[in-house]
Image (cartoon, rainbow, N blue to C red; front, side, top):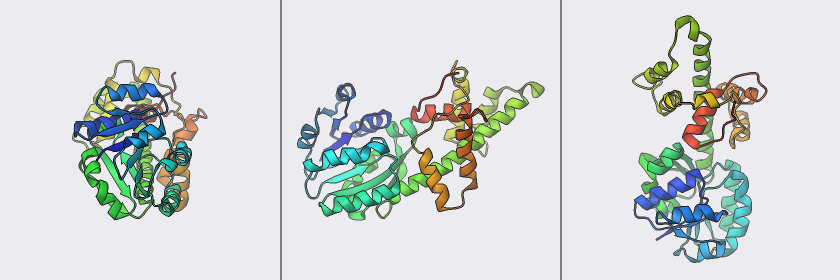
Length: 296
């Protein structure tokens, strides 16, 4: 069986490379042909139209969408006419969970299967082993589990529930992430206030935080990386560009008491009003996901 991959941005590109490392045949399509040509040099099978893309897939067709959430609806409208009963669509992006529930129902009426998968781990995870939060029908998950196992870090994937649950769980994950990143940002800003008084070395502090402390983890390791990259932080402003998940976080706040998430989201919002400095938030987002930053 081969798999189709539609969307070759930073995450999609690296997920495809990950699959190719596992000797998985991958057919690729992207709206810009340059990215198709680039990944084809690594062994992916290139296509340059949806018709060619779907024609090169074995049956049942398995198609992974790795595109922005606001593009999913239009892509599905264009893609579905080329699909048949029993084919499987996987949405690996940051779609809102209620949209995923609706899409599952709509596609089910056409005999097309749908899985919603939250993907975490950033660019490095996509390349070398991601965390996959899988929602949908369990029997459909079982049909593609071997592909998901190849993509995931050890113990980093599982079937987690009914349609929509994968994206719901990823939304909650993103809320936790907001809080953790916000706390790190607040801490660094506090250290900066007393940097001169205590003659602090922030690069050394972040090294210690990242090794053996209670807050050790990917985020603090990326924080230390930000401080060791020559000229990196110097070029990043206090302002955090609005990201794809920010509006979704407002919806999450309505579903459960999440005061930490609320404050963490406001850190980003207020940075754009020049009320707070969130340079660290912007830097971490850039390192793990390649998200854009605003220059000083």
